[in-house]
Image (cartoon, rainbow, N blue to C red; front, side):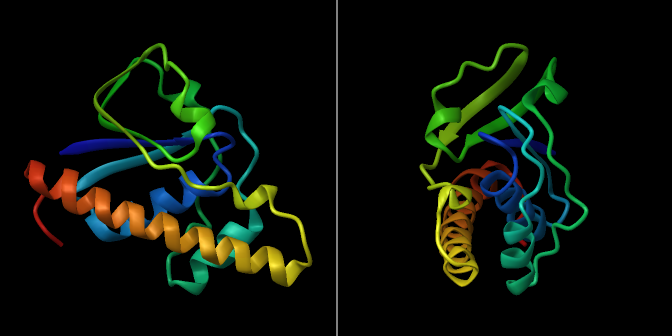
Length: 145
């Protein structure tokens, strides 16, 4: 079974969304984890945005990359530019991919405007994770869902 680790800065939005979509679409045919350079806690707007797309990430919790020291992953996927530039000591991986996704938590505005930004970013995350599944996971012997 393939193992995937998705990383971003705080493990609060983008990586949590990516983990949620990957878990949903691969349905147990790969092990999926997410973490951050720091632990910012799961953002409530991310929970709401994902729930609107029928993906429940309410049981997710923020973790730092240190939680995965001495583990091996088939894929290390970074979803923010800051994490893409890090060298992750103690974590081994076969393939490394990067998707540059803006941080919705950095957006300022009214609550409605912030929610709209989270929806926009959610759709980007979904698009990139479906692309990743199709081009990487499914071509490497993970059965189609």
